[in-house]
Structure formats: structure tokens, C-alpha cells
Length: 223
Image 1: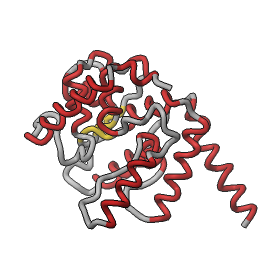
Image 2 (image 1 turned 180 degrees about the vertical axis):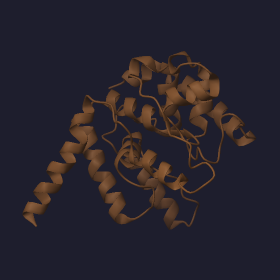
Image 3 (image 1 turned 90 degrees about the vertical axis):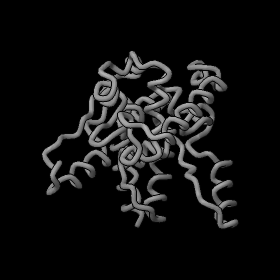
Image 4 (image 1 turned 90 degrees about the horizontal axis):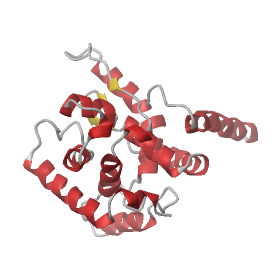
């Protein structure tokens, strides 16, 4: 048992530490999407994924995903305890549940794990989240999130999405475009950037308001 634990920890470190400096060639979610498409009419399609460094991503895009997904990102240690408490309170009251995953947790899941819910998967997600927060700076976590997040069918990362939906590089995204991309994140396979529903447009406007209230891209430099 002890040797198994040591081997598991070492393998985890080998999976996480190099990506502090090197861009991931792919992610678990990308490989799963490609596998799921085999045998279907779009099985010939390839994953659209183009890595770009943080400096080549519009600051509006970085702020939009934080405003949309995890406003405490600059200050938490990987977990939003208040959001987790709210989820448990809603569960006890039999109210509809909303996710409490932080950007760090989403990176851990998207990069290394799978979407199905189970205690085992959540435990692995928590473990990898702790490693990411310990071994990577916050900007690196956000940089990888922006590059591997799914934003459309077979489309991962803001560079591929920006080129596909707006015909421009991610560095040129304006506030409205960034908020629209962030608006589909709850379910990018259901909500569409190119054909936004009324719900997506409402969410886009909400994200724009949150971006203004957070004070602009400088918010991401908060301690």
C-alpha cells in the first residue's frame, strides 16, 4: 500500500509539474470527444486546438471566464468553500443544484479526468486541483484553462474558437465577443456562439455587467 501510494504521487507529479512550462499536446476531454465521434457521420472531423501563450489572449477573454465561472479565482486556493456550502444547502432543501467547481478544478478535470460524476472521480479531481495550485502560478492555471476549455463542437481553446467564430486571433477579441464565448461555457455542446439563443444573449449581458463590477482586467492581478 505504501509503495502504491508513493508511485501514485510520483506519477501525479510527472503529469502536472512539466506542464508548468510546456503546453499540453492535448487533454483528456479532447481525446474523449474524438473517441466519441468515431463511427458517427462527423467522425472524420479533427479537434480544433491551437495553443497560444497568455500574452496572446485578449485580457477581456481572461476576465470574462473569471466573471462567468469563478470570481474568487485570484484569491482562493483551488476550492470555493462558500459555493460548496451553498450546494449542500440547496441539496438539503431539495432545490436545483448548481455547480461549485472553480477554474482550477475544471482544469484538473478537463486535462486529466472524465466528466462522469462519482466519488472516486471527485477525489481525483480534488487531488489534482491541490497539485495545480501548489505547483503552478495562478496565471498558468488560467492560461491552460483558456487554451483547453471546450467552446464549440470539436473546438477547444480561445484561439481556435476566435478564429472559427469571429475570423480573428484571440488577442483581438473585444468585450462583447469575449462575453459571448464565456456565455456558452455551461454547456458548449448545447449553447452555440454562432447561433446564440435568447438565454445565451442574456447570459452574455450578465457577464458584461460582472466584468464591469469586477473593475476590468486589473482584477486578475488581485492578491
